Length: 250
Ligand code: 4GX
Image (cartoon, protein in one colour):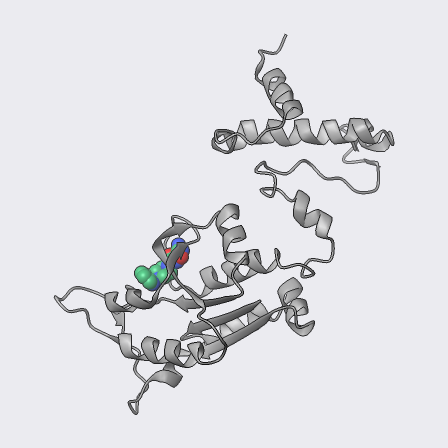
C-alpha cells in the first residue's frame, strides 16, 4: 500500500512514520510512505503557502495552487488514481470501520491542512474529508499519521501477529479485556493486600478463560462505552453474558 503525504512539516511526518511498526513495514517494502513538502510546489521566491482570507477575518488559508500542483505531480507517480483525503474537523469521524474501508484502497494521498484551513476549491480534488476526533489541533500532520498508523496495521504482514489484529479491541467492536503478565502476585506496601492475577488466567482452562475475557470486555464496554453496544453485533454467548451483567446484583 502507498501513502503520499503533503505537508508544510515534512520532517515531522517523515520522522514519525519511520518509527515503530509502520517504520519496519516501510523497510520491509510492505508500505511506501512518500512525504512531499508543500513549499516545493510554490513558484515564488519566498515559497509562500498561505494567504489572508477573502472577506476578511483572522488567520490564514492555504493557497490552492501549490496543493493542485502537488496533487498533479503525485497523480503522475503511479497508474490509476489515488484516493485523496483531507484531514479536518469537518470530516467523517475516523472509526475502525472507516479504517477498514480505507485499508482496501491501494493508494491514499493525505493533504495536511494548517491555519484556518485550505481554499475551498481544493475540495474539488478531495474524495473524502476525515476527522480524528472532536478537538482542535494546530495542523493535519498528526491526523495524517494517525490515519496511516491505523490503516497500515490492517495491511497483511505489517503487524507480525495476524491473530492479534483480528482479535483487537474494536476489531470486534468491544473494548479490550484486562491483560496480565508475570509475576502472578506482587506484594505492595505492608498495609495493602497483595495484587494477584485472576485465578482463571492461571487455570489452563481455555474455554473458561475465553468466557472470562468476553465477560470482562462486555462489562468494561457497558461501564465505559455503552454507545458501542447499541449497533449490536453480539453473538449468542455475548448477548447472554450482557443480560447477566445488566441484572441487578443480588
Ligand atoms: N481531525 N485540525 C486541520 C486545518 C484545517 C481546517 C479545515 C483543513 C480544513 C483535525 C482533527 C484538526 C485542525 C487539522 C485544523 N485543514 N484534523 N486544521 N481534529 O483539528 O483532523
